[in-house]
Length: 245
Ligand code: PGA
Image 1: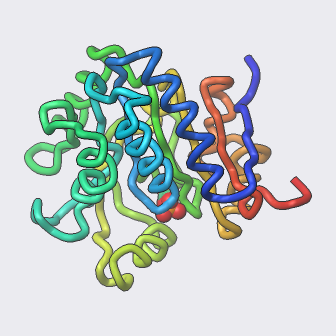
Image 2 (image 1 turned 30 degrees about the horizontal axis):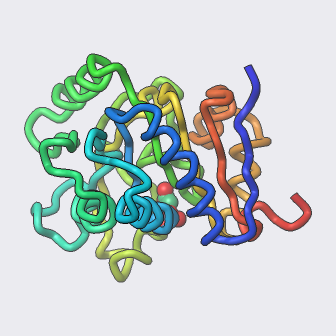
């Protein structure tokens, strides 16, 4: 099996266009695709690009099902920091996806039982067609914080200090960032038929090379993408990849 395909583009704008080509092609081929949608800053341009293409009648997203990637624990549904709220504003509303086409993570009750049921539901639906993912400064995918094994199931997690610090940029300060979350597990993500990893900006330079070229293991959860072969396309801009890349 060949390794991940690496697409290096000039800048964030080109990253959005190039990744939109791949996502649009997949949705056109599989109109009822199950799509995992990350929040974070990096995929916002991709979502805007997809929305523009839908507006122009170039793609049809009516048949897709959206699967939530991760969510903080302990927030009210209408909290400004809700990642579902962010996904609604950036993806669901612009792409006209109705609530009944969204599979949400469990946030209360017996989380270990309910997360296991979530994984069973994903499997029963035939798994994930497209996972759109960003890369954490610590090498996480979703909130699969290091160490995370390739077999990690959907579950509640404690957020790492690195993640809390970087998420502070979204919400104000470190004290604004919840300390726990639920995340789709690596096992489900790594078995997606198409995995789109978006990496932008100088701050990701070191980690993206560890992910793609470094040793594979739980300390860099995204390094398991090396084993997912040609299902994976990494889109990196020059700032992230480095000019000497
Ligand atoms: P970012 O977040 O897109 O805001 O850099 C990525 C992540 O932490 O997974």
